[in-house]
Length: 85
Image (cartoon, rainbow, N blue to C red; front, side):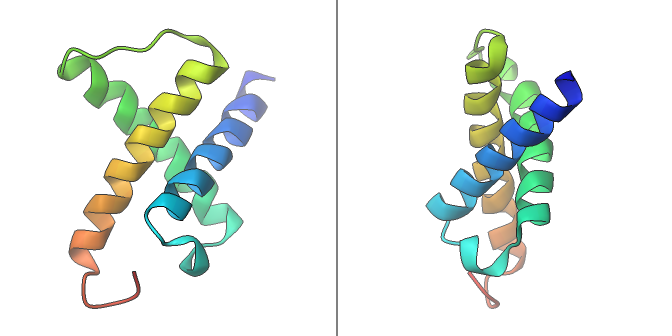
């Protein structure tokens, strides 16, 4: 059951991050979910490293995944700068 919640929350976080980074038109729902989940792992690793940790729970995971997904999309934009943004 937790896995399903992580997929849903990761998808929402990836979708929100793609809207903020203006990549929503070039990504589908599957890529949004993947970016959100990878962003969750990235944010979960990155935020405590800089001294900023969020509490557990769905809201904490959503914020962490969103921040991680935005960072991930920034990295992707660096490699695809001349291509679709």
